[in-house]
Length: 327
Ligand code: F6P
Image (cartoon, rainbow, N blue to C red; front, top):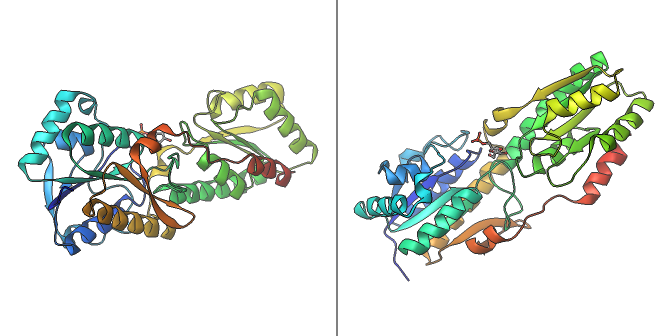
């Protein structure tokens, strides 16, 4: 077992609310154990450019409530190459970093897995992405906050939609994952939800909308996950309008506002638990694992499994329920 004296911590990929709370927890857990901590800025890019800053307990004061990531983040092409990773390794070795904590999504984990094997450096990963699309954890950091942001937006849209008897198409994030769309759709009382994981053609959607129209609803909201198969909210709205001219249709793309904002209490507690557990596992000699939460217990999963197992967190029951409840 490699004994660790100096941890490097970084965030990578898309930012997510709760990352700062997680950084705080990890830094303070390591300091409490008598270890040094180095913040690696801008993820793998920062490793290659030696963008390092020593951290102490005060470096993470007053950040638990902040969205985004104080360590910054980036998507780094150079780290896909062996030369880039060699440069990163030389840099972290030069400052004495002998263990890594990585917070991010599957791209971050793929880099961590390869880097750890190639250079024999221990790494523990923490799931941080609003998409909630990782195997091995029921929830990822930021997902709860993002879903609440979407619900708040849907509620506001509902006010104006009902006042004008309009049909709204609300596009939410989720390139490959419909978790935000499904859960925010249910919580916001949506009449239909289009997901990347389940094909719903325009024909089927129109049938659902026809029932809504027949029951004389004063407003109708369709949630469109960005990765669904019909080409996004504008396209879906155009096609529906072409068939049902009587509808006054509007489109709202929520976009990156879903990524920001102060983390919910759920995300702050989850972030604290995962940051704490990740450092404890790293210091006890574990490597190439992800710490996650399953059934309210902190559990670990080998990175290889996280990356190779297909995740499907949507249930057909919930989809059926959504349709029943929206009549
Ligand atoms: O954070 C995850 C995610 O929001 C996806 O749902 C989305 O497709 C992607 O990130 C967009 O990321 P970026 O704006 O960084 O390209």
